[in-house]
Image (tube, protein in one colour):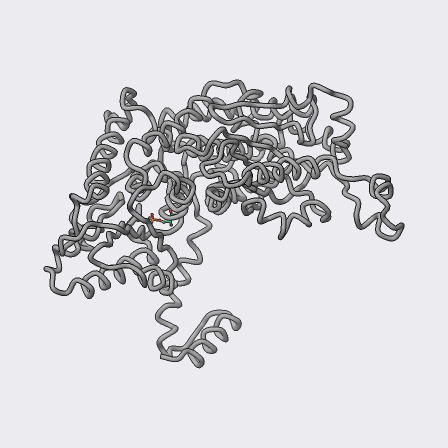
Length: 544
Ligand code: G6Q
């Protein structure tokens, strides 16, 4: 997109700029008083998800202009191009086809003469067979013991998705316990392995490229731990029975010593942060079984279908994306909080940080021209109610408005003494407090002393999306993830950026490769004076 094609040049952008001038002072109390049907009109459903969008700083005029922006920037058309396999990741010359990972086996999608849906189901079938052998105890380790622990070794997209989903679906987990080691900090592996028995432990080396420094370092230390712990077993048998790989790089996997029969592949059209529904989800499949993993994929597909067919006004991922643009570009709010009222979703905000910030943290349009508007916001969050006792103070009374997604599950997997109702009461109360606040008069009427009135007042009109699911099943989790994938897609499309590359992570990696040998040598340094001084301080202080 050239500058003349920037979204700022659309009529809708100009209209939204005009509307923003007054919307900043929008009072949600007044909006609700004037419009008794507001909650109902601004509720959008998608598959098993219901979202009350009425507590946003919007009215029909603003919504119309946001939808016009989605239309003028071609959100629906670009989505069709993506799912059809067009090369929309232009900087890496790749199609973007994570939606093909969850299409039913009865579908087909021909890309360069190859049915990618058939390829996906071939791998899923092999994954299911191995997952079943591990779950049933038929797959044994080198000493004949059954596998009780699985350690996923991967980072970024090869860690965040499976870890998030494994925690979210803990209720569905059966016998096998999974662990996730991602950090190159050796303490991560050492602490994880402390309570594990090599005879009962299977490592999954999850790396799309099989070149990632952190993952290869951790995989090597895992291999050493297995070979050391199973010293009586034949080394190649120990590796064959205690390692499987998830990768697109068969040569790299073979070189590491993992039998490529125990490698589950995926394709370069799956971006790391979009890969939890590919072979990268193997740990989740082992934990919950292939049938439930199939449900997880079906949930993604529910939202893919919705995204591809619902008009923008009734299209939940698109609406969440457009509302985010309203806040980021027109009202100037720099961050967005995701606050799940579900302990099972404790890793969901961290997962979304990568999905959103790595996708849309960009400063140039697709054609390389600099953007003339803000792009991705800072995404952050923690589960409620914990966040309430930590950082909600700033969301309620700070000087920055932080739009938030509040996510709730109506029917709990576990309920003890009415605690779930307590959780949900807090969820609804937070949205109510943020939207409607508490005036000085109300504070005074409750008997507060004059000097405390301003301290105890809440301005209100702090926007939230309330997203509710009936139950946190694998299918609903798939729906939630796809909801955010397509929200991010919508925003990237409007902004005209490439949401599918991540060049911004390269520079640090490159510099680290240069610094590694410098830490253990006395060589001259020619960085800037700060970096040189840090390296010298490390050399002088590090005990070996
Ligand atoms: C995600 C990124 C990145 C990637 C990791 C791990 O979209 O590409 O987070 O997932 O760098 O890469 P490998 O799977 O290749 O080890």
